[in-house]
Length: 137
Image (cartoon, rainbow, N blue to C red; front, side, top):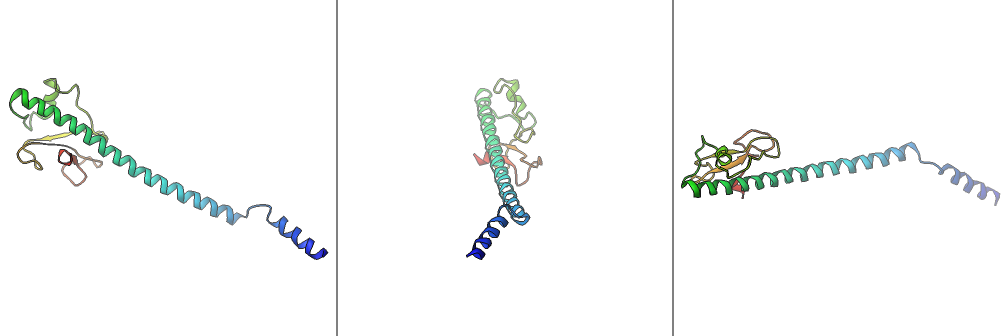
């Protein structure tokens, strides 16, 4: 009976603290969860930036249509959307969520009979796959 009592005492005493392996395992799992969370959060931010850009584009598009009603023509590519501020259709030109100016093109490459308003997207290079434009509205 004394032997059983001593073995329980030894077992209880040896489990009183975490081992280094257990601590490393827990820290590894926490690190993995944090990494997954950061990657997921990054995707959410990028989606929000795209939605913000589309909101700006919609606002600019409405101002272009108001300009068209007043002047009976669309702004030319050379006039650009800067004419909208000059004619009071916009207070100021918005900047896309990545810090770049919006682009305007008439006739559009996506809307052949009208115009394209677009952001160069996250990479800042116009006319490639990551552009966000009026054709997405």
